[in-house]
Length: 398
Length: 153
Ligand code: SF4
Ligand code: SF4
Image (cartoon, rainbow over all chains, first blue to last red; front, side):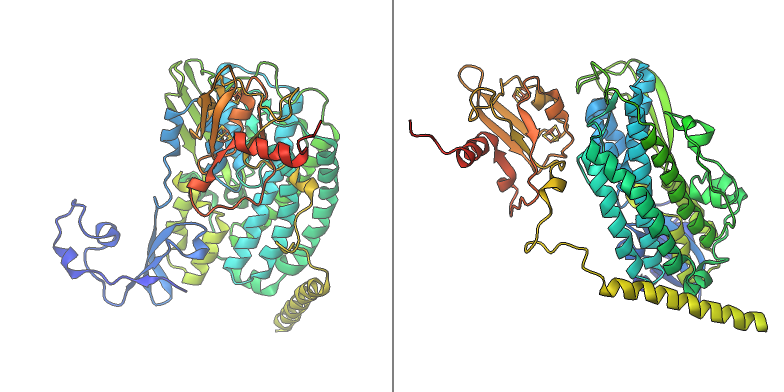
């Protein structure tokens, strides 16, 4: 375990309460050093924090007594940028908020603006959005799968996960034009229509991934080392999820089958038949299983959507252009991202630029559970808990 | 007691399953592409959005369709474009700063003349920011000359 040891500065003890002097520890935890405890800074450049998350841990031997995530190392003012750009110009930003599931964010923003302006988009565009968003969700879960197992010490699986991810990228590139920060949704539709190659590649991919998931099970899920490291670690019950507003796989692993796609159906999700996996356990292993079942659920959606893809145009006529003004008012749209409920609240005063854009990041709420869940665990288990939250720090900090 | 032994045997077996999967991978052909000895198929690159390029004129392949209307310049969220109008409508300078571009497509979709398109250059490399300020008119000229050398009539 790398990290730097920060012994507490004894001078900090004399600081008045309420001043900003001292470091994070003396301001939030304890005014002076506690004998026998050491302070461990996990991150901000630690690989298992998936970005630049810093976690300040107070350790007693191998055990964490208290810990607190310190955020803000990757704050990029996305919300402010929403106020200084026209709505169209803000779309590419949404691809950069969460680089693993960019289409959910794009959808939330585009959808909120469309709701405000009362735009109806062609049915084919809705289907294309569903297909691309679900494929994107699969690729996000695959990367999480690999990275999570890597956090636990198994480096091989991430290479296998990337094989599938590259295939998904090849498919999505046809309709989004990019491989990472896709932001292909437009007001009134999507930017590129699906061609035959897209359809055939996507159709081939579904049985292929189902086969591969069996391999994943043999390689990782049934592996005794993984199970012993995850089972019973970091239980998060429905109560703690409710208190912190956790959503997505964490909430579902706690046994609540809550999914924005089912509870507040948007787009054409009501036309598809798919399960919302919940349970069976609320520990790290339960969250692992929920995500793997979600990949299967997403495959079902993609399969149905491809089979019933309607003909028509991929974007409505007279789609809004870059200088399009939002009508005055406000609107809100929540979509189910790979990490939980992604939501965008847009307020417009009728000017060329939105008055306010508020982004609700699921990772932020999910991360706030961590301090409570990790207290009293071994440091190595805390890493497992952190990995099981599936954090994307750019999204947490925005 | 018996159960613990059985669990351990099952555990060891699960490790063997994992090892056999990695073993099969070890002897299977390589999946990655070794750049620069190998490159990706053009078919895959065809949908990739690389840096912008000017499309060819409908009549004159060496001429741009751009009419210097500045719609793209205004649409661009990153302020990457500079179009300087020359005599008549055609631009005299068309500068594109790729270092600022997020490849969003606002300019391509805003252009009324269809003068812009994404190229599929994935191997663009530069060692300084200045090199990424691309002169698209020169690029268009170079492409035209490369593909159709001037005819001697
Ligand atoms: S693709 Fe987007 S960022 Fe790049 S030049 Fe065009 S409008 Fe600007
Ligand atoms: S929008 Fe098109 S025609 Fe107008 S300046 Fe840009 S490239 Fe030229």
